[in-house]
Image 1 (cartoon, rainbow, N blue to C red):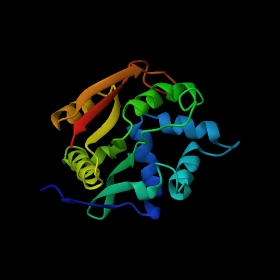
Image 2 (image 1 turned 120 degrees about the horizontal axis):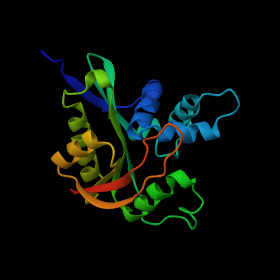
Image 3 (image 1 turned 120 degrees about the vertical axis):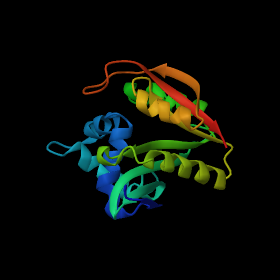
Amino acid sequence: MQPTFTLRPARQEDCSHLALFNDAATRRLSSHLWGLSARTGQSAFEVGRTLIATGTDHFSHYRNWSVAEVDGQVAGGLNGWALPVDVPAGYIENSPPVTRPLNALKVVAGGTWYIVAAAVFPEYRGRRIGEALLTHAEETGRAKGFARLTLMVGSFNTDARRLYQRLGFEEWERRPFTPFPGSDPDGEWILMKKDL
């Protein structure tokens, strides 16, 4: 019998797990960006964990996360955020080249409840935890008054794309993927949407 899981709001002591979920969901893009900010000798994950723990105005702050637990162990995480309708001038142009396509898609998705990251540790996959996290995102977006839920996925991440399509997400727009050290070789970023 598979253990059951529970969902709860993330706590500060979850930040190490959340950094891993964030990086897994972004296919190593987060750790690449964190590494660009790291001081000499500092781990990229230390940068990410600190941002998640202390960046109260940042979308990745732990208070914007929910976690799934199996038998008291953190198994998965979901980061949701309201994408603004208006973005500052230069938002796309002033961002790192690797994130410009993503930021262009965020502009398209402005005014939606956005799934920043959703991931489940490999040993807990196949238990419908990912599906429960995405359903939780729908419920949260609806409760906050949003009419649409959005997320982004790489064209190379076929398993995640299949899950999103099965749960009713549809492709909205695409932008080219910009490879970075350690990334998938090439493809496209796909913005997906689901009306709430």
